[in-house]
Image (cartoon, rainbow, N blue to C red; front, side, top):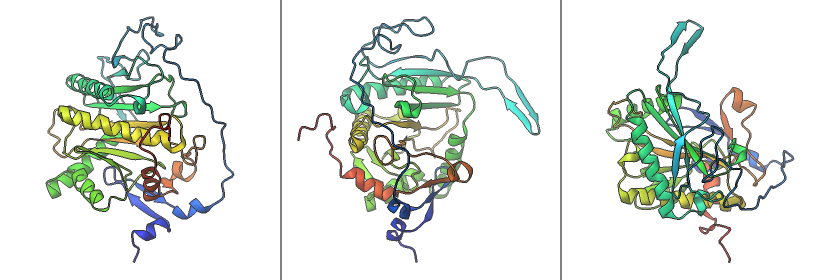
Length: 350
């Protein structure tokens, strides 16, 4: 019989109950020698204001509009939106050639007027202002009659394709519900019908019993490496109280969410003592006007770094043609992150 300890030694697959997808885990490969790609570390000087940055206060964007002299988190419609609020509708279903129009709005949210201030270096009270702007944008965009899904996400670092280093995130609101949200709605609904509770409520209960993968916890939130993680140091932040979206948080809960956001991103930066890159996204219920009691919102972080600040995980070969695969187990990754200092490495004088 295979035990939990065996999972740290032998090849196995783990299932993500939210999406129904599997990941192949091969822990024995961590013992192999590494002669792969190495990149030179690039450390840029900190700049609080960049006259060439269109997200810094007072500078002109490519559209010709001036970014205002903002002093707190600031949002605007993306000058090069991937989604446009067009009125026309188009749909064709000709067997193998099917297409459908997609209408929506894309916005950019600057975290701070400071060009160099990332989330782990911000005060909790300032992160809370970002969270409250996320709530406002979700509510305003989600209430539009043709918007059925709102996605808030951050691409941090050039390695993740971020085109501007000024700390910011994006909000994409669209007419149709995308694939990942559709899968998560289906699987959470099935669990809710069977057990009359949210899937993630049951999941975090189990995680609190073992505590093996939990990184941070406060009164309202828990941050952990999910059992089914794909990326080497993938994490999730989950509210302990079931909520379908972030607008349902109380004032205290927004503070706790901001606090655990800061702690988790400090942990990331401390791992390889760099401004840790990732793609992070908040998964919430669709805004289609339906009652989504099954939904339990959560925030996922997908960081690419594996062995150092310059060696990243590539999704290639088997992962492109078959399914996700990882070598370091979720438990190995959690153990490494839990042993790190809780003080940001730039402020740790000890």
